[in-house]
Length: 260
Image 1: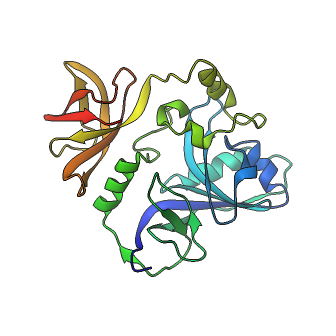
Image 2 (image 1 turned 30 degrees about the horizontal axis):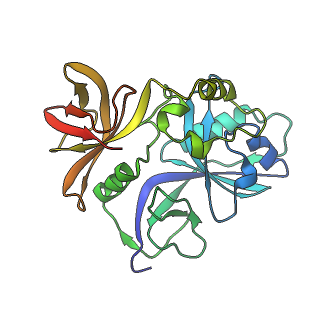
């Protein structure tokens, strides 16, 4: 555990339990919950009826007790949405509780939820580990291209803009909430108007800095960090689909290059 670091206030847990828990959630979430395990989470989306994001999720558990990990501040929305669709099913939907996020070797009992190549997990309760700073956490997120709901993406975002459809959506399962838009986009090649991109920056910029290609506004940066390994500032944001890796941009008053 000496190499494990922790941060609090980044994620919440909503638990759904009861004999109908798995079927209930499988009919609502984009992921096939047959893939979930008690100690290793799978990605999923909770969508609205029109197919736009309501929450980014990590899902784990057993048939009758399923945990939904959300970004901090989104748990109440998830619980409320699920309660709205709770009709003649035997489930209890618990209000969200805070989680501790771990990076590095995970202790027994932690829920593994890898973030790109970063070994990341969640625990409900106290754990011995060294605290990491908020800046360190944000940099890890940017480098892993890991969005946060209501910051990097929001309720106007469609799943294909996140770059997470391959990890979060099952195209083999039956219907789920918001499926029509996801299926239609996929049948058209998944070409969304915007894509979540990582940008190398030549200096510090503010979050929400406007991104320009020449004189045209093509998006904004939503999270920034400083990569010690690269000795460079990095940013994450939704950019117009015309912006390809290697493109040279202006972010605020700073130059930047889009990464692959």
